[in-house]
Image 1 (cartoon, rainbow, N blue to C red):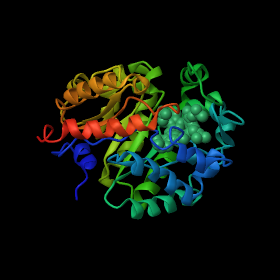
Image 2: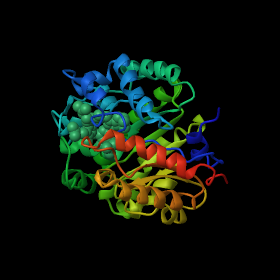
Image 3: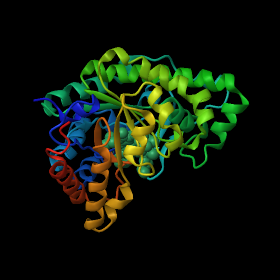
Image 4: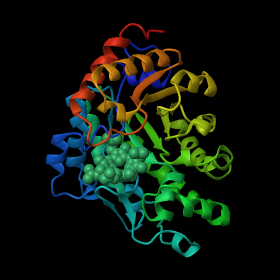
Length: 344
Ligand code: CP3
């Protein structure tokens, strides 16, 4: 059975619009909270049995068209020797932020065996999932660099931008290291059998298009271009990226992730016919009354049908307070409304 998700990534005909959700595995699910009780986030990412079970939970519960590997964008950076933790309610926190050439030397050489737990988890999952494709992922160099330079989550990425402009040589050296780690991490996942990959440049939307092109795009291009021969579709995603969509497509994507601020047909018009699009329901609207959600899903499917290939998703991740039964209803609705109509 061919996967509707992979067909849409390749801009081939689909029998229904495929749907999955960023952060579908996680705190919105009571079965996830039960399984994670007393186990630290990074420890759970390093246990293939847990990774496998947590990744499968939303597939079983919601009937989504793809699974996404349970891991985190900082996992390969930690594997390369950076001392960091994921603090509940905060996110990644780096013990000693990277702000100088000497700090940069604390990031070790990339060693694929340092993430053998990911290789093992993906192999287990590919067996368990059967026909459902597994999406692998990594953080893009800019978003990773922001965590490493700021030392944790940041509202305005002030130190990151100061270093980018103030010491471009160090900036590019750091991003080259991160691109090598990211590319290596994605290659491990592809060799183990993932069907597609998503590069999360979650915070790229904080940049002007000019800065994105000079300081960030070459490094993301190195990652996405390094996977061009893999045959695996590459999804490139960020939040608030309306001015960057063309550049993010050009960086080497097959599918461009679009947040709720830009209609999918408008995004597609701008990036052209060579790319599929993914998105773009505002995750906050999952808390609205059902008729509101229904109308939004219908609108997004209509706009998506005007693009060369549409994968339904949110514009960013599922919020922990989301009612999971609503997610299941959204999957059913996307499938019901799109059945037949998106055959093209
Ligand atoms: O279902 C999935 O999407 C797969 C799992 C996944 C996680 N993190 C698990 C996680 C994915 C794809 C990520 C990627 C990730 N991690 C991104 C890019 C996506 C995005 O949201 O833009 C970013 C920026 C991170 C960094 C990070 N890790 C943040 C901001 C947080 C949230 C902090 C918090 O507690 O609110 C984390 C922790 C994290 N990653 C959790 C999960 C399920 C929550 C930790 C927990 O359950 O204890």
